[in-house]
Image 1 (cartoon, rainbow, N blue to C red):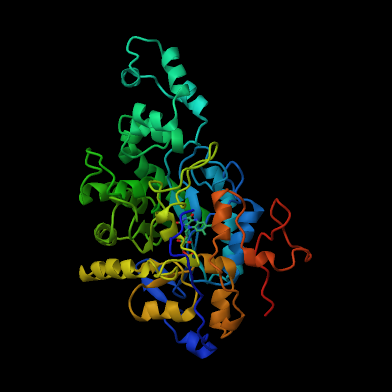
Image 2: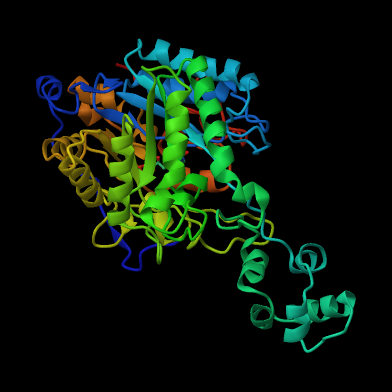
Length: 483
Ligand SMILES: Cc1cc2nc3c(=O)[nH]c(=O)nc-3n(C[C@H](O)[C@H](O)[C@H](O)COP(=O)(O)O)c2cc1C
């Protein structure tokens, strides 16, 4: 995991919590109504994958428990974790690519409605991603995956020699020599595992993404509505298919890449297909990046144009994240897959308590201000959700008062203490368990292990009825709040 060289240890905000009257008069606890989006309060739990689905992508009791626990805190909205839109094996990622997933998803909806008395709106994040393979052993890669070409023979001065002789020479070569002999893409596949890109248009399934994606997302959204969700969040952020279309690195020359207009085209097509396949009152918004935070990637100016396009097209909200890309991710170990939150852009997405001068709290705020201002300047009122290190009422309320954002996302803080929202509302903020921002949770996410919070594990794990993670040591949900 990349860490800022400065290594400055920051402290959570230590300011007085509001009393009940101040909280109830605050913007954070005020309603929001825009188009189809109506929230009882302006707090939001952004999507977080907790690795609790079955290997086939079905909802489990642990998935239901996870969302029920958040709903007990009654945030304005919860976004269910990134959920795969295609009907293809995706490991233990939640899926919505077929009607067989609906019964499980309905259980999540029912649990959230019941636990929040219907106060919390429930959205589901719809994700598509391209293939990535684990980093191979060198021998396996050279023998099984690398097509031997004339370029290899040429680089090795072995023109006219058979494949087996070339393979033998490649197997003996050091990494530095291989870097000279192989193409950059081949060398990357060897060192980091093969990874598809939206620019691999020689592959028909990649070339045809502009034709396939709208229908796949639209079908998934229809299922989300059938399962009872209030809306969907189209995942246009981080390292995945739709974000890769928006990226400045998208050099497709088929009208779906290159300039801003080309890059935003498929995300707009997907939105229109989704909008056309759900009821009029069903909420459709997206999560996108305020900044890719990688060399030659899209920045705030690009994001402003994208947000304007999405707002103009009629999205009900725009949620902003940042970073989380493959391009600068750490080199994985042999047998492991590259993880998009291990480089500098990953740090920007989920900054930790040990940081640079800027610190981990509110790194996405000033980009959000610029993007929101740009959208407002075009006369559009689409609500903007901002997240990233927001953990205190004063901080959240100031952002709303200043017009930095319309809705405040609390991801890791809501995980640390799902009752944050109720505790603040009732004037009992001093009882909040503050997130330590050590990224214990994110470390578990990296290993695809059931995500839990280090704070919960300090509480008794032998209480009656407490469920434990497969390692038998960690609670699966936050301890209940004894009011
Ligand atoms: C364990 C974990 C899983 C996450 N999964 C997702 C996800 O599925 N989709 C997404 O858009 N962001 C995901 N994120 C990023 C969060 O939504 C959020 O943007 C990030 O943690 C920064 O907000 P915070 O500082 O309030 O935690 C995840 C974060 C964590 C810690």
